[in-house]
Image 1 (spheres, rainbow, N blue to C red):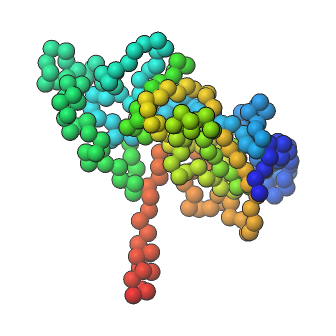
Image 2: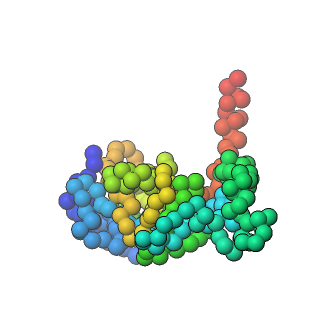
Image 3: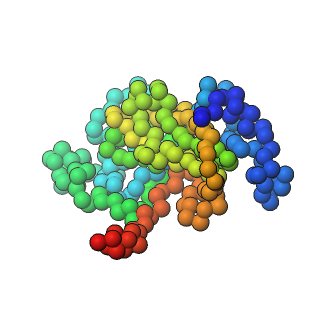
Length: 255
């Protein structure tokens, strides 16, 4: 059963004795959203906002390209703007990364295994900050971002999704990772992709959070030893995905 906007507000004002900790010995509410402004409360959700910091995986950015373009309203942009002048030589095409791109150099083909991501290992990132004027995102990159809002959820199931206006601009704010957990604490990492070159701005509405009630015995996220992202802050890269060889053993033992 999904919570309505007024019920979200009510859950934020409750002091639930089941949520005791050292800082709140008398209990804290089932929902914490910080910062919170009632103008962002909807019929059955709360709007979340884009934090200024973003990251991309370093290995996925070809040499000479920039992960995002600082947006200047009124300016006409071309493919050349994705290439950094500091990596180019106007007088020697051999060192001109944009010229190499135009010639179909495989260094700029995103199907090149050079840009491999291994999900079982940690991946180095490049961080940049979105200025107030915004940045243009590239449809060929995946961006790690985060919500401005820090949330805590207890005794409820939280999840995030895009707003309808985001969808109609073909902005995807998560890849399968829009589901939270009872007991999750932290900002929400977003996995942003765009279908076309798209401008995003800091503090724009980037999604909404919903809450549902659930049945069954609880296993809160913040008390689960296998949880990776409790108390995460800012765009958080993926934790290495384990290869569970014990599953292989179970399969082989069934044969």
